[in-house]
Length: 618
Image (tube, rainbow, N blue to C red):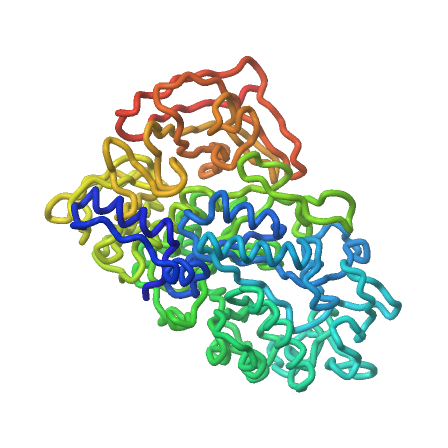
């Protein structure tokens, strides 16, 4: 199903393809005011791409929409819960992230920002064609003490009493002598009436509770939010959610967190929630781990469908990793950015290219334990620090700016409205498939390179491999021959043609779609041992390398630890000096020893990606 595209990016994509393929006879007319307004806050559809900016504050999200996301291919941002929450100092682990999931009131005043900052973020991102999907916590309120405490915005609360939200003990399940906490997930009544790890369970069957929750959600919609991820939805009866969401004025996108495994004997199933939205597919994430890092063949993923125990396509929201999966007790069942290496990147590329569900990618921060929260401006109860992806500070990673993230969001935008075709596989761990006449991807999860001829339905011409930097020539018959390195991928689409001697990506030159005019691809590889949580960067005398500071575009991936590598696009025929650095979770930097390394990039007519291999100097 097609969707409204970003106003600026859609025009750029159409114009670029017209040059490459000669497909358009006239210049596209400028969008009308009505068209721009319609595209400003797109509805979530099967062609959408969501990026979760976990624990980012509102001001930083607004800035990132302006600086990068508006032209990236991403259509929506999933934000952390916006309501008032408990104080970190009232927990046993003050440095944590999960206080956001313990509501005190529905005031839009939290350590992520004020109501005014929230509204500005929504408006700023909408102006860039990016919609906001809010994580909403409506199953429960905070785990309360019997003594009065205060929330982040100053609201008083205690167990079963949250006056700023309008709740007292009559609005909760299992109070007094009937108090219970969930211990048996095969017991439906217990899962939906007892308290989840001490979090006070709201009686969502009551009309006053339903009205209060609906008023909170309506407030978010009135501010311009376009959708919700309902946290802990499994703990709310489906009929209650249908009633609450049915009260809203508008038609928001809704995805429910219903943690479920097809081989479990839990009575609460995803299908119960189809009446009020889509459902997050945790089994999809487990399949990604099994087929990219487990014993199951990667090529089998060409046939992934509802028959695998998944929800129907139009009821599915998919992810490789969300904020919970690497921080939960069953983290081993999922891939994650910090330990998954090439398996993680390939799984993300597959998810973004395949025609199943609405995909959501994750932009995280590094952490030394599963509870650790983001960088703060001060002590435990202070606000979350700003994120600057152009000069990474603290523990922010900004991986969403990479080729396997934003590059694949641009791919998905280009192939909107098409289905999967022209499948190829080697019966083992390499596969390829097309998306209509608009794109093609090859995933090589083998330990050695593959060389093959692939059949596409794309127009003849030269295209940029957005995941490798080289050019691919599609012949008149729609075929191309290519070598794909071990544990790497190749992706081409009509929005990234090879034009006038350069891979020119719409939006930000060189990132994510390929190098802009005057840039060349350099494949950086360094052997560097690290301790858990450390990340490796190349930094140096060029702006693209951060001007001697760590920058997201120069973050290296541990595809084959202790080897770290990445394709980086640098000015052609340019001398520069550089070093490798290790950045710890607390933001401290370890520099390699010795004099600066140096290199001169190839001329801008260089074909392919120039590779150099180094070892950490200690």
